[in-house]
Amino acid sequence: MSHPIKIKNALISVYYKDNLEPLLLQLKNMGVVFYSTGGTEKFIREMGMEVTAVEDLTGYPSILGGRVKTLHPKVFGGILSRRNITDDQQQMEQFEIPEIDLVIVDLYPFEETVNKAQTFTEGFDESNIIEKIDIGGISLIRAAAKNFNDVVVIASQNDYNVLTEMLIENAGYTMLAQRREFALKAFNISSHYDAAIFKYFNEDAKLPVFKHSEQQVSTLRYGENPHQKAIFYGNLETMFDKLNGKELSYNNLVDVDACVSLIDEFEEPTFAILKHTNACGIASRNNIYEAWKVALACDPVSAFGGVLICNREVSFDTASEISKLFFEVLIAPSFSEEALAVLSTKKNRILLKRKNVKLPARQFKSLLNGIIEQDKDLSIETTEQMVAVTDRKPTDIELNDLVFANKLVKHTKSNTIVLAKNSSLIASGVGQTSRVDALQQAIVKAKAFHFDLKGSVMASDAFFPFPDCVEIAAEAGVVMVLQPGGSIKDQESIEMANQKGIGMVTTGIRHFKH
Image (cartoon, rainbow, N blue to C red; front, top):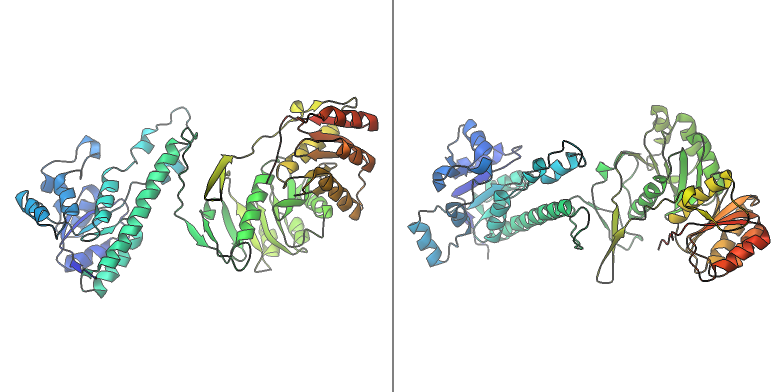
């Protein structure tokens, strides 16, 4: 059933007036009567059009500093009245309420205000945010959307032109399916708005309630594999400037997320190469050029087709070396003009300039028929938190390497073992079903690239249930071991380390990553 209606009366009260003028002109040409408030009323009058102030309709002025303008039966009755219900129509006549067929209303910019506000510091006035919680607007939108059978609702400036063209095409009429589509969009906007307000008030997760809404949507080329469809909900432009390359894929995004989480652990100049979210090369040095060379040497085979990230500007010299490698994505805080020119020669290379925006402190994912959410693993164990439990104590250099290795362990798939030396990755065993398998994988890989394990350190994401890993590591040349501790057989591992003449520290913090 098409159920066409012609608009007779329109309530218009918007924050954003861009592109509103063509729609107003079209409505005027159709003989529509305008009702409006505040700045929108003034805007319409300045266009030379007649408009009735809402306060003249209701008999009440705008009160409480503008908090109450449209909350009145003569407004909501006009929106919610059912044209096919006799009792509704009789009451409309009794109380002299005009039928409102079109509601054009948007919402105060709550999210934008929150994003612009600084964290709560001295002198911060939270009322600036609270006053952006829209009451009248959200109520008008919901009322009009509820009564889509008889009312058109436009809740976003993005639909001003859509309605204008629709009215021209349909000689001033709208059809039921079209009004329902506008109602769908309106409820999307209102639900997102409420979710944003809840998120603001529940910043400390005091209520264990999952509410998440994203208005920015990107359709990806495909998912993990070509036969899977995929969508990204989020706004990458708040985090990156894309300087070159094709659109990011599902797998690219997963790797970019892993890259950013890893690099944020390091303050010194650091370069990392990731493959399938695991670091296959990473090093910290005095400058990014040296860090890149050492990181690539960790595993130049796996680096092919990898995702790269660093925490300093990419210079021409560094870019010239990087450009010799085929890679998918490069992320950096900045690029010199010369570096950008070199790296942009391949049109598909994705170059991302990272903005100074941190990732959220909470993370979630779907599984089974629900969602799991947790605090992000932000624990960074310092040397002061490392407890030496063996006769041999770590040197300052070894302590630094243990901190480095422990940061890598935290961002590597479990079960994992990381071997490091001189603030660089030697090799790692990732995603294995046993810790011994992870260690042996790391040793084999290190030997394949001719690394000398003598003087290296080893970090484990979880405790050793048996002393076998300690024994294998010592025989390979590892001199210092880091583990969280907590096994009922910890003492056996400690005794094995003492027997082999190597050292061990415990941190008390496990870093599983599944």
